[in-house]
Image 1 (tube, rainbow, N blue to C red):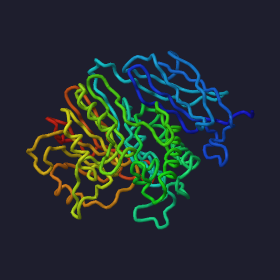
Image 2 (image 1 turned 180 degrees about the vertical axis):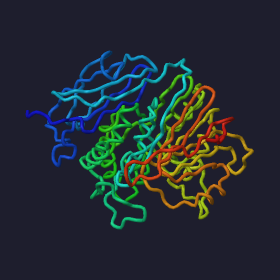
Image 3 (image 1 turned 90 degrees about the horizontal axis):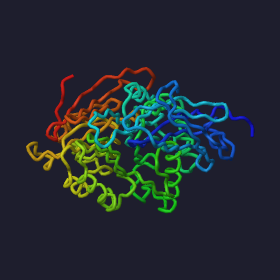
Image 4 (image 1 turned 120 degrees about the horizontal axis):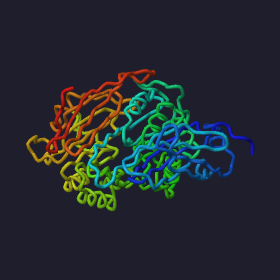
Length: 458
């Protein structure tokens, strides 16, 4: 075999933190967009070495081992590390042949008895051709304990026939919509070559959830929404989920067209991250499917953490627009499912949402139009990293929805702190994404008191 070129062009990542370990990820790809061989790699399994250390210089290595990079999985590596200390920062790297990867930072989840605050970022919707991922670089600089990604990691679109207002090309416009495994792999490779995205992955472990664009825009359960047959769509979904796994630090491999995304990641006594899949199991007027809904309500009932953070992809509360509701693809289209979940709303419920590209915040109430009705929790919806929004008359929407308290139309992310005595969400915003170099500012700060929002002066 000829000597490999530099294989770590897509960076490194960690994810799925537990108190005693994490998943470490990389993918060997000396030529990430090679037209015939995925990543430009030979069709053979490679042995990749990994190290975990207490310091960035690797003077105190605590574990080392090897993992197989198999061509059937695009030479991706998912090394499951165990035996680490809870709530502890570590550093990791990979090597193969004479090549060494960049260094990544990770952190294990705290132990069950921990009351330490948890600092975490929330991101979603990062369309490559809509702008630069500057927000992710700023998030990396904040060095969070964990990053929650709420979906639309890639966009499957091809080149639009007639680009609309606000559409601009960043470096490269995709030529064709992703439909095959090779096309999805190339799309992920294109994104993973981005230096700002690599920085965010190398800064902290991720807990990631796909929404629709990882497969196809607005797909619903087993239905493609584009007129193709269910069988053809499930074949496409299997390819999409395989490529998603190959490029994210996940624990569970997809099983054909199915990928288990719902899970709980516990962070001591402070927060349970309850991750729910609002896309894969939809059927009729049911958002979650009966099995996942029962799982979710059981977890909400059983959680003893101070904050129960429901991380899911789409807008949860109603949003009534002047021309009527536009939320058929969100929980507004599944009001019975939402009501059943809210019937199990625990004290300390915080819902995190993505998908809508703008920043929103609001209360969850037993009667949406009555500000004096029972407070059931709060919702924080993240702005997109780059994906451009549609036109929104925000003043009219806020006036028509008394449970909503905040809107911001800039790109960015959320940075949250969950502590035993408070939950705080900061909306970070960048003023432009069509060129590098945007600074970041805090657009608004909220704390949760009595299951309601309280805006904090900056």
